[in-house]
Length: 102
Image (cartoon, rainbow, N blue to C red; front, side, top):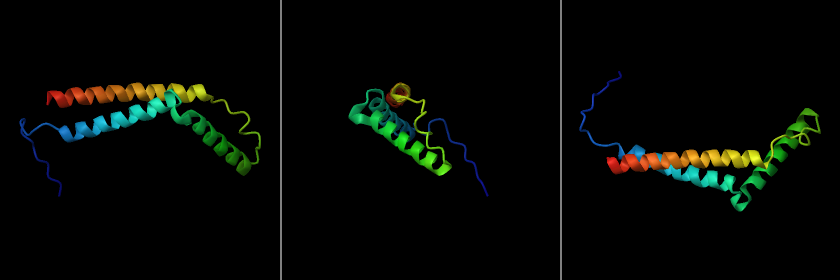
């Protein structure tokens, strides 16, 4: 049986989920910055992994030229990293503002 309890308005502030969102924002900011600025060769290693997967798919399907006509370049990974970094920065700032206001 499912029971739903109504919480009172002064039950407290949800700092636990806000701290979790802040931590996810910090992790996303770090990972996005790695791709956006190619820190530690993150874009290069992602390109190598993608090429290896395409070569393996090509071998399995019999199309050995599958990896040679890859249209995604390093700029794609840098743009995606920038979007993730900016979005994570917004999430981190929002959770910080809500924690400070709570």
